Length: 146
Image (tube, one colour):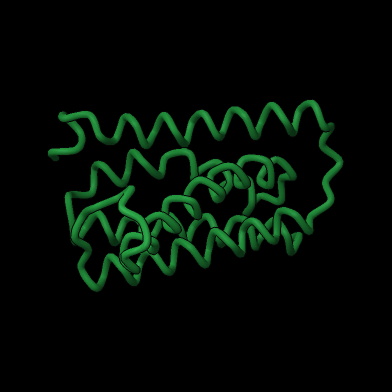
């Protein structure tokens, strides 16, 4: 297995598992299952040594890192964009998601692929849209309250 592909797959899987743990201890797992749907592509592609794993993972990891950063800024009292109470387990999982996102991003930037710039750009845009849509859908009343 290519090392970068394995790192991308593993980082994506760690993010997914950490978010499932958050779902199990907080608002319910359905919301977090919906939020993590786009991560399945880099997990599967990464463990299958596909170069597209990089381009599917980068926008997802960047979005999750940005969200974790907002949570950390709130917990430190520096910003109030997100204002929810967090349990110690949830706080721990934000660290796991943040670290795994950084690992995935670094692995992605170090991995030189043969994917054309046009196709790579399309994949990045597609997975950024999918991740944002999954987050938005997860807050619809029928899903958020399950």
